[in-house]
Image (cartoon, rainbow, N blue to C red; front, side):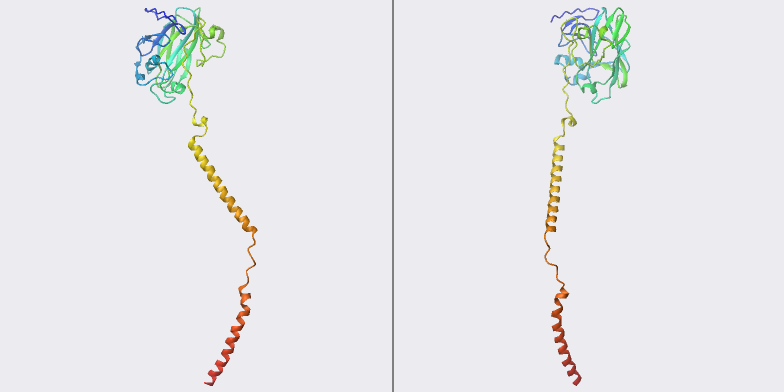
Length: 306
């Protein structure tokens, strides 16, 4: 790869892996050359706040030499913008770089992005997309031709300046970590020819440039971790279920055993009917009564003689 850097008052122009980069800025940071040979200018604007808070943590999904681009940022409590000068007509790709280094949950920082008043990113929630301290790129194809800008299927008059604006949205403050504008087109087609097709700024494919046989540098895919619901029942739940199953089985066995014993008892005869004790003892009571009566009469006679 041949690297050609021309440093002057106009934007840096180099040939890198992705094609011809016409403008690149490390927002909130200093000059930097990334792993693809793209040379980023130090942040040229003063509005808002430049921050290196992200240097406290490493950035996943980014090459070590590219992590710095995601660790620094510029943010503002209202909307702010960068002006990108563009001289030539042609197809371009705008790459916007972000990382959430402060918040640890979704819906805490949500904002929009516009290009020359065209909405190019709506309700950007970095954490919701990739999580904390993880690199995220928004890739926006556009075209400039005969004084007209075409982006996201919309057209407007172009006067030589692309206004990249971070617009305050639903939550917290807008920000950006870095960005670059590269000359080239998506899949080797003119964007004016494909702007009627379904478009999206969150593409998971590589953008092939018509001006070269290379690609826009793309971040590696995020490895999704399966949630307990997706991964199936966890071990504790499985153990509990097993215990419940075994308990139910044991209960069922006891019930079955009790029922079978009752069944066996019901089938066995309980023996001969109980004899009536009074009926059985009636004959044996006659003799004592007769003896007592026999003794009673002589006793009475003797008493009378006295």
